[in-house]
Image (cartoon, rainbow, N blue to C red; front, side, top):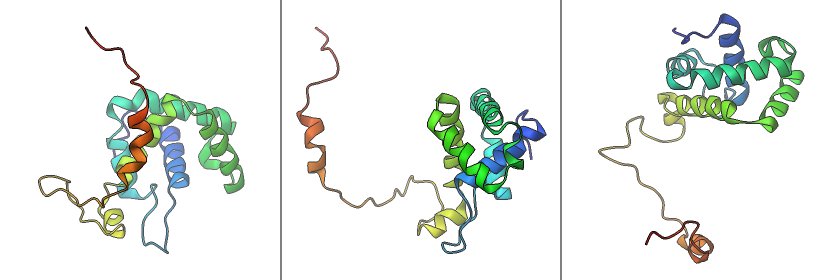
Amino acid sequence: MRNHDLTADEARDLRALAGYMIPSSATYGVPGADDDLIFGDICKSLERDIDDVRRALADLRRYSDGSFADLTPERRKDVATDFREKGGTPLASLVRIVLLCYYRDDRVMHALGQEPRAPFPKGHMVEQGDLSLLDPVRARKPLWRRVK
């Protein structure tokens, strides 16, 4: 599995964080984000976000006073909560990659009752929602300046 230049410690912390973010569930029959296939996809998908991910992992290591992967479950929860509250662009990039890779896994899509395929050309049916919920947005003044 290619880790896009992540060190072994970075990859280990990333895997532990991904598994903490989305743990496996026997109830729903889904793997966690630290599953071999999903984590492999995460590592292959770092490409343009590698710098942000490395910054996020460095922040995680600093909050952990060492390796996040070596923490007890209770301490991981505290560190992950602190990490999420401090947020920032690097963490947002890391979370986006984990979520994208998790939800494109066939097992996860099956568990959600979805056919594991690209959305096009067939598309997906979307249940009609209550469009009146958009009325406050439609009623507000534009956020932009009109061009003359």
